Amino acid sequence: MSIAALIVAAGKGDRLGGDLPKQYANLGGKSLLAHSVDAFMAHPDIGSILVVIGHGQEDLAKAALGERKISGFVTGGIEREHSVKAGLDALSGSGTTKVLIHDAARPFVSTQVIDRLISALDKADGALPALPVVDTLAFGGAVLGEPVDRAGLLRIQTPQAFRFDAIMTSHERWNGGIATDDAQMARAAGYSVAVVAGDPALEKITHATDLSLANTRLADSRSIRTGLGFDVHRLEAGKELWLCGIRLENAFGLAGHSDADVALHAVVDSLLGAIGEGDIGSHFPPSDEKWKGAPSNLFVAHACKLVAARGGTIEHVDLTIICEEPKIGPHRSAMRERLAELLQIGIDRTSVKATTTEGLGLTGRREGIAAQAIATIRI
Image (cartoon, rainbow, N blue to C red; front, side):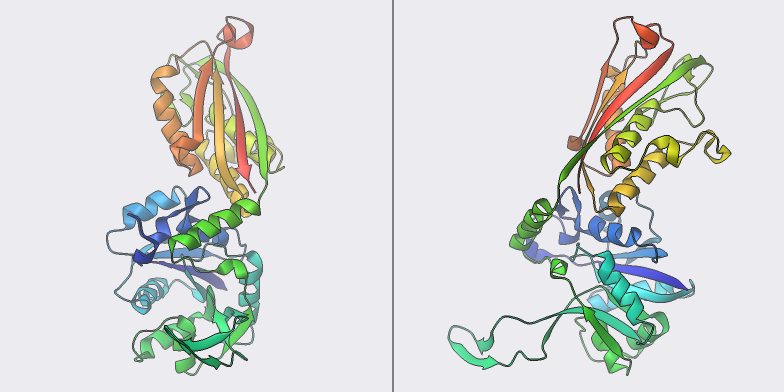
């Protein structure tokens, strides 16, 4: 059984304001789209993630997701149902048996909601999360009209889950005009759609005030944690020298089981320390030949994924490289840019510094290079 997540991020989001479509707006240090992708990446039952984007938005989407590994991007259409159909067509033939269709403008997707939706598909063709209406409803404009009975009314949310063949057939048969969601298309085609408990955190972000409230909610519900990482590697003639993901021309390189990027190793340990997940050696043991010569960006990606799986956001990473040579100054900007790229955060959330030990110790004797890093995450 293959379960896919189809994230719809093709809208313009004009009502939010600003220069970017709302799915690329910043929320707690990363885009709305990235929040949604991270939620599905962290769920063990989701086998693939496909993102539907607007025409000409691929560069925006790639920048918003950084090095997150998804199945790909698909260009959407004029209306939402056209975008979803484009995504379903792209998934057709992939072996997908169930699909969760989600709007990127709802960034706070919980594991519990995904679990409830998947379980509901054991007995129904589709399922959606919903909340009861608790406010008084009434007709009217400038003058209040008659009240509306709210008994039985629901506030429908996404993601909405479907058996793949059912929702594909529903889209192929749809001729009812503009569809506001996929569940109404499934019902029109005669399929059963179950209702599961929704989540107040799944509110759709439409206006600037919604984004402001989401930022406040995110900040209030999370704590700040820090982690310290330290590493040292021996210098050896004829080895390649990798520091902070950048290859430097140097007569001596660092020796180690992987590419021995001492700077990134310190960063990884700082991230793991902040979430209490051990150290780099426990995740990538030197005794495992699989990691021989491996690029350290793989270790960074793994640590970032663990942070995201815990619901964490990387707020800042401060890195200090300790060596007599090579001189770090000429490479500092490139290192900082690469670090930000690997961590999928803004460059203003990174710092790369360098110091010496005034000729003392193994770094002073040019026998090796050391690095220490402090990671600050919100979780």
